[in-house]
Image 1 (cartoon, one colour):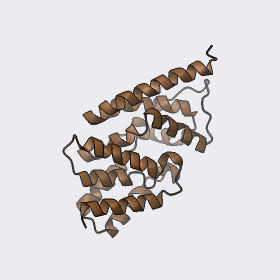
Image 2 (spheres, rainbow, N blue to C red):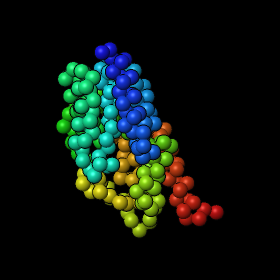
Image 3 (tube, rainbow, N blue to C red):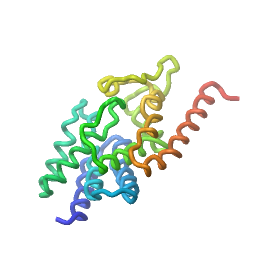
Image 4 (tube, rainbow, N blue to C red):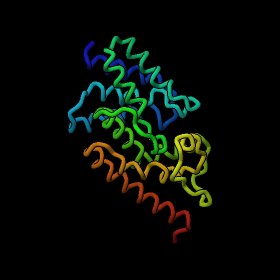
Amino acid sequence: MSNENIVNKTILFVKEKLENAEGGHDWFHIERVFKNAVSISDHEVCDITVVKLGALLHDIADSKFHNGDESIGPKIAREFLESENLDEGTIQHVINIIENISFKGGNSEKTFSSVELDIVQDADRLDAIGAIGIARAFNYGGFKNRPIFNPKIAPNLRMSKEEYKNSEAPTLNHFYEKLLLLKDKMNTETGKQMAKDRHQFMMTFLSQFYAEWDGEK
């Protein structure tokens, strides 16, 4: 099967699997990450097929929607790619991307490294910041029935992976616990440049948020 065919079949597969997904982790999230990854790939020497498949399948079964089980996504991705007779080397590379892409509180060490993972991780992180990132954060907070903000609950900047996964803190805390940290965690030079404006947009949003919260005159 040609690289173009497997990518197109993967697109159809992911669209079907995520048809009823939460708004911040639906097909449109995947599509944006896919586009970001392709844009970054233009400036890197990489296996573009692995990048595209990794971007398309990275959230095929996000653990936060499966009781924290991180094995489901890689399992679904492997079963699909094997059914399409993709070579084992490419399949394992995609699985490695899925298993290592997550933020996980920012304290976990990668167990795998490749330029393809760097690209897909940057692409995913870009969709977590800026205007889209703000919208996704509050959409997920509403989905989990979390408060928007509570001045009495301070952000926890030293969460373990488990604490991060189980946090029920107000949505605004998420900016300090993850979103504002991502600019300095980008892997590629292109990703770093793309992150700057999105980061600044979030800072502007927070400044306006606090002003309004405090009854700005």
